[in-house]
Amino acid sequence: MSRTEWWRSAAIYQVYVRSFADGNGDGTGDLAGVRARLPYLAELGVDALWFTPWYLSPLADGGYDVADYRTIDPAFGTLAEAEALLAEARALGLRTIVDIVPNHVSDQHPWFKAALAAGPGSPEQELFHFRPPSAEPPNDWVSEFGGVPWSRTESGQWYLHLFTPEQPDLNWNHPKVRQEHEEVLRFWFERGAAGVRIDSAALLAKADGLPDMPADGGPHPFHDRPELHGIYRTWRRLAEEYDAVLIGEIWLPDPERFARYLRPDELHTAFNFDFLARPWDAAELRESIAMTLAAHAPVGAPATWVLANHDVTRTVTRYGRAEDTGFAFARKRSGVPTDLDLGTRRARAAALLSLALPGSVYLYQGEELGLPEAEIPPERVQDPMHARSGGVDPGRDGCRVPLPWRTDGDGPSWLPRPAGWERYAAERQSGDADSMLSLYRTALRLRRAFRDAGGLRWLPMEAPHVLSFARTVPDGGGTVLCVVNFGPPEVALPAHRELLLASGPLTPSGGLPQDTAVWLRA
Ligand code: GLC
Image (cartoon, rainbow, N blue to C red):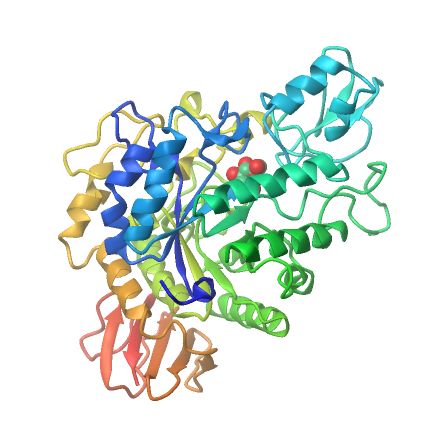
């Protein structure tokens, strides 16, 4: 692993530990399960693994309510196992990225417990945002999960939580909050983590005095505050001591403001949610790609491409719906007619599209198996978004169902696997050259040859329903073309020397059918 800027073109696989692989058969994924499946991940051909929070947590928000960053949740294993996992992964060529959740902690974190015990006016409470008792909440903010982001303590004080009441927000004006996070970063970098994914990275700083939302479109009191840039500059200096990478979870519609976080002395990369949020449409995706590349170029940061994560509707399902039902936070839907064959065809084409683009790419576990979104019976739903929406939103559990590994079934699981889920089992797909898993394996292997090529060049052959571009590897490394047909009319392939990979069968006359993508060697 000598390439120092590996993150510029890496393929990073998101492991949601609770649902990845179950080593002890109790129905909950764990580190033993991950360690047993490291060869699977190496064979898939990714470069790094990002672990969603695996720390001690009451799991009020799937682990994004951290009670102790230096302890692995006993449901998942031990710190010694995590250290062994990092070493074993590294031996297989896989780097590890851990998740840091700086905006809030669990209400079971020792700091919050101490703050409640110490009471109003205490230094312990200064680490959070407490306000004196009053009839109405202290301001008019709305929680990221919907509803009022303020709850009362037993003594009637208010405390702020942008997410659930079990996730009190930290006060980032307090030096102790900053220092603790720097120490947590060091803790994991010392153990060999190659980087961190920063949860809710644009939310931690709050306007002084926590004012109401501005009526006139003035600066937002808790999104994208200018103070954040100083925090990330400090983190960048720290990360560079370890040659580690900072990856921001930043949902910001304005690409120019987004790119400010990626200036050379701030974060290395950030998730490109614009791409994920677009429907399956040539013009939309082309616009997103062009806008993304244009926004990143001035700051010299690589783009990222994301089709799925643990918060959004699975790709196969959302591309299989006639109507765009939305797939970001609080906008999932159950009971929407979905054509999974169509969704799968499109997801296969989308895989080749995203893996051909310049930058790094994220895969969410199960994407490589073509898993659809599962519909979870309401009484089994655990995601707090469901209850917070008054049961209107099914929540995010539908993309968090434990992976199917074995053709003959996998035993108990904390969320029910839908009937017939065995047909997606990794074991079955592994031996099938036409499976989604085989497509991802082949694409990730081929991608290594051109992922470090420069930018993309749009090809002139474009019809409005086609996206096609070239990536040229310098010094005679050849040119790879990616052509995606959003159809319906079939498309003749541009001149080429070799068909490298197709997401589905070509037409009898060798044309590219609708909802199909190819990689060609020019
Ligand atoms: C991030 C996570 C999400 C979590 C939230 C609060 O957006 O991706 O799963 O619920 O932050 O930590």
